[in-house]
Image 1 (cartoon, helix red, strand yellow):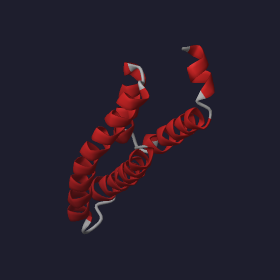
Image 2 (cartoon, one colour; image 1 turned 90 degrees about the vertical axis):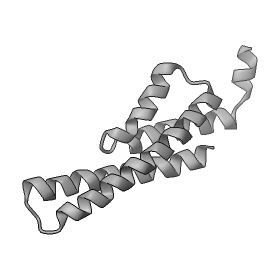
Image 3 (cartoon, one colour; image 1 turned 30 degrees about the vertical axis):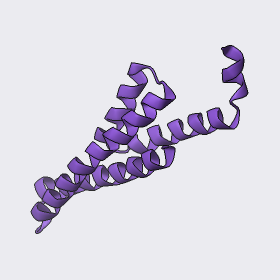
Image 4 (cartoon, one colour; image 1 turned 180 degrees about the horizontal axis):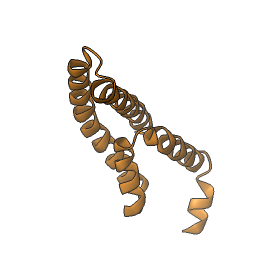
Length: 108
């Protein structure tokens, strides 16, 4: 579960950065060919963001995250570079929880 979330976080993040750069090239620099590149990247990001949402929601449901944390993770795919930072934080948190499940069991 964590691996597929991580993969989609990176894919979504890279595509969003590419989309931002292509929009700058299209509208700010008027680069020839940026129009078609922007269209392809926008469509790819849109569809893959939906996959990211499904995987992130599934992970958050199984990890029993509070609603605010779940929303932040879901929205990270819409803010350039945020997906990279959120993914890293979530991965460290969940890997630590899997490595040392005793404190969670002791609290119950």
